[in-house]
Image 1 (cartoon, rainbow, N blue to C red):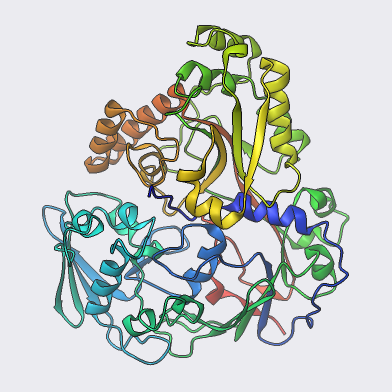
Image 2 (image 1 turned 135 degrees about the vertical axis):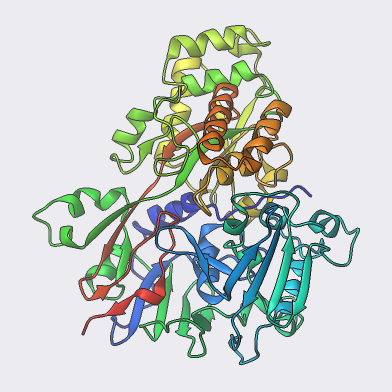
Length: 530
């Protein structure tokens, strides 16, 4: 089975949100207004709470609160100690020795040892676990590939020196290795909890600042402050997630939720300076890319000229202005603004109908009448096609005379099985895990990568990315990534659409709630002002 990894899907969240904004309130569960030290949030709910499996945003928001790892990213997206209080790196840059804090406890009171990390990583890399992220985020460790392939019982590059010392050997010096360990796949789980049954993750025992108290799928999920937490305790006692509970704006106005994600339906209202909501609006950039991917191994998109034609035929600026109300930024490339290596000098495939027609003519098909049927895969439940996608399809129809069909897959199947399920095209997005171009360019476009859903192959590109991965001079390294990005755009395995931004309303009595560029808040820093 091909793998599909990543904390992807704000577009899934957006789809739920756009639907929920028009849900009638009749029949919705009623919840009491926010009181005391309880933070009330609206959400779509997680797909899984297993750190080794989670690979999309809707699950990550919970996993990051319940579990933790050796290191984490701070507010500036720099790696800082977490369960590991310190570490050393060998002179050759390939051996890391982590020193764990003593007295760190799982939610049930059992102490965390170095052996728990070894177990957790080997369990994530066990083929029977079915992780679609282990190769991406742990694959630099010596022996991981053998474990993933079922050729080894252990990961040879992970050694338990003693109860509080873990030594990790990687296959080459890589500047981004520690960043990868901030991803949930590297988080620690309790062996007895995991071995309690196949649905253990519905009753997870982690080490994070919150523990799961209650979960009624599709209705309610409650996180409670972990009083045994090794770090600074959370200010709020509980975080109550109201799962698809009704119209978020109505709930926000009635005081039933404290934070509301803002969609296009309300952007005029909240941006109006005379509106009472304007002072409660927070807008933050997001290190994300949304795109249409092409199946480069199947006709007609195995022809680069057809891919280029489809890119040139879409007027993204008009769609962003008319449908998204300028709530996103047009993407000419892959790396979003704020990401190291981002270049304003990138040459994108701009809207140009004449060029689109020329590339169709230059393709092996010569004329659109010779193209095979084309279907685009998206997440959904059989409802209508989102406005932005309808506009894109209309552009292909008007500018190229091509009809494109839409096939919807339910979200869980879409996120975790897209590699097998994709048609000729698919709609997808990527939110950064850490601020390094490797996280976008290698993860998405390297031959054989878990997240290379395009099946894009370019040996020269792979060699350039390999060289950038071990380059120790930052300036030279970023220049290599910029070169790689331009080559990707030229070969068009995808049509970049836009870079994301987050718009939320936050009640005045809620302090410290903010979304990082990775799209996930640190709930330990939130408090309710009485």
